[in-house]
Amino acid sequence: MHIVHVTRIVWEHGTHGGMEAHSRSVVAGLRARGHRVTTITTACPACDSDGETLYLPGTRPGRYSSAWWRESVRALEALHARQPVDAILSQSVAARGYALARKGRPGRLPVVVVLHGTHAGELRTRWRNARSPKGVALLAKALLGAGPDRWRWRRAIPEIDRFVAVSEQVADDARRALGIPPARLDVVVSGVDTDLWKPDATQRRWLRQKLGLQPETRGVAEDTPILVAAGRVERGKGFHLAIDSLAALREFEPAPHLVICGAGSAVGWLRERAAAAGVSHRVHFAGFVEPPLLARTFQGADALLMPSMAHEALPLTLLQALATGLPAIASDVGGIPTAVQHGENGLLLPLGDVEALASAVRALLADPERRQQMSAVARQRAVARFSLERMVGEIETVLRRAVAERQP
Image (cartoon, rainbow, N blue to C red):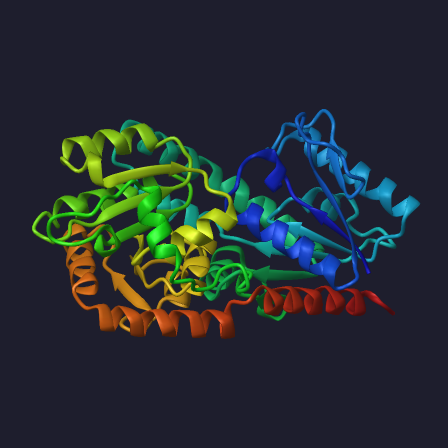
């Protein structure tokens, strides 16, 4: 098939969130299966066109705009005229302009939309994080946009052939909040490359050497517990709770360290919080880390902390960590319980509870045998349920079904 992948943002724009990583993996996977995939996305002045990605001039990089809705339709129709297209794969609402522009017209191409969340989930996130003037402003903006967003979705839903939700939680939200018919909604749980994200015990020493940890009086550097948190460094991700938990673990020996992998607007605020808590020397800000190096970091750590305050869909960093055999200590929110089974491959915590987070870390670090058991289960289930090959295969099936349902 010739598949056109439509998205407002790609990895090359420089933003490396879950949707961008998902897009990158799906496109590569479909191409590996013999399909031709052309991506249409927004302008990217620093990007080189490779003939497989069309960056639309005059559009705002990484953003939806009136120019995007207009130019994306033009680009798609021009491409179809030159090189016939079989199906459109849209990340979120990126292809909504095409669906509405071609409403009721003969020859409209089948459209499959991948849902990474809903406005209802975004409102929950904004509500939980309205603890500052900026947080209140973001909540107000989300509330003002909720009505128009719902109205636009209602117009577009009849023109979209099939929807793919990345988790059961997203599917439930989509059915309730958007009214998407269950018959046109498939759940394709996100997947990761389990050949890249796999256990490797040799990285334990490497990670501690990288952090500059030296042998201590009560043990050697290899004994120092390392906790890792990864993702966009924004307030809603709960990294501040991970820092606070270190302060609550002062009595633990050897004292655990925390590595925060990611970039975002909250880095300065987190540095100040670590200093105020007296744990700056045990919090390491790694910045954005490319996947191969992040895999090594996960492999060398003892546990993943994900005390998110956001209404998560299904974080890819969580699946990546579990695939490396890293037990997760995470908030019981959104789609996280899709991947974390409490007491089996990790621990689930009440939202925003620092004391519970510290207690969970303490219990897991103090019981190496339990940690090893969780590690084995995490890897086993990741391979069985969250492989990239399985995800790409299921998306391919949905695309073929959408094409077949359009044929007379």
